Length: 461
Ligand code: NAP
Image 1 (cartoon, protein in one colour):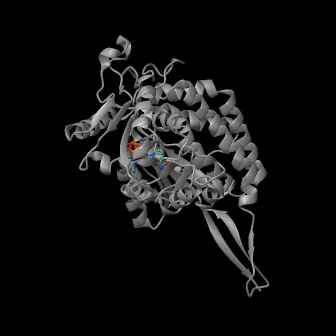
Image 2 (spheres, rainbow, N blue to C red):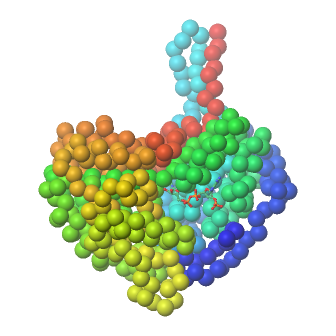
Image 3 (cartoon, rainbow, N blue to C red):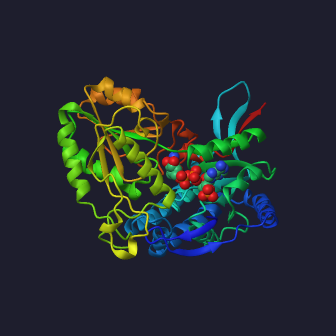
């Protein structure tokens, strides 16, 4: 497919881009290296000024950026505009807090003075996915650049216009040359880049396969990597839960971003006592969602980002149905229900699968689309056991009014985050990341800014 903008709602090819030549990539690497030598000596307040300018641009042009995201990857326009605003938030957050997060940390030792000084590493490579095409980039860039690093972005090949727009935001905000550059290159070039001495570390958000490949290339060179990979997050509802709130949140938590979010609730683990009621209510709410043109304000669910994703989710659902699962709603794409201009789009309907037997992809695969998988359990032990029965461990949402249950869920769920009576979300003020095959390292919070710095120990007699 190469590097191209293709409207996922219509299948229309909008623009095709030539990948950069190796010579052009080398020139950008040189520019990044030279940029770092200067940028590392800028002050926190100078960097904060540039990030505040970037935040202003994001807010002023939120509609334009929103349209671009929707055009390239199909999220609803309202959610795309909200994404642009959230990027402004993370820019301002680190503009305001980076100096405090990176101030020398003193420790009592046998020295007359000993402390940790936080210093930037250099040129960082960011390999990013299409699903939150602005947010994923800014949540990496704001802390990393505030710490004095510089960045090269290899964005997903289906969002090149977003990638270029983001580069332009950094230019317009006044960041010095070489501090943030977009590389329009294919995934096959990433391992080679990791072998380049000028690149000091990397971060990747995406699939397990991509993460494993990048980590292997980085491992050969002994370079640091942060990996934000997939999730198959449980959404546990116990008998004591506020069912109205749980059902309403379940819809958002599953359908966010047309179902294509790493932290979407994917497996609904329901106490027997409330399972029928919960499933019936979820079915009703799914039936009421409008599938259609993501540019239209009345649309709840837009298309999946690529035909491959549509193919994969269709195969996964079919495999479950073939083994005896029941589709209470959805279960099959039906283009005839769509207006003629959208029939070539990658649309899949909101789907609720119940009675899923063991031995299907629901056991261990991520369902990256608007498909909820419902399971019943007889008690808390069974709920926790099922929640942990996945190779992934990104987030978990659990609903209960009982503090003792809540404590056990917090302690025993194997995930990077547990949200009690709320949906899993990212927030600049708290760290974000996974365990198990969901990756390692953290973004956001104070922890996020510490990932790409040299924690230099200083000891003075
Ligand atoms: P993907 O195929 O892994 O693509 C993500 C990025 O990695 C793209 O830039 C892609 O480039 C690149 N890439 C692919 N294969 C690579 C390789 N072998 N070596 C180096 N780079 C490679 O991921 P996706 O399927 O588009 O994205 C969805 C996945 O991302 C889901 O699993 C989702 O859960 C995960 N995700 C995780 C988080 C998180 O914070 N944990 C957030 C969002 C998404 P090309 O586009 O050129 O192939």
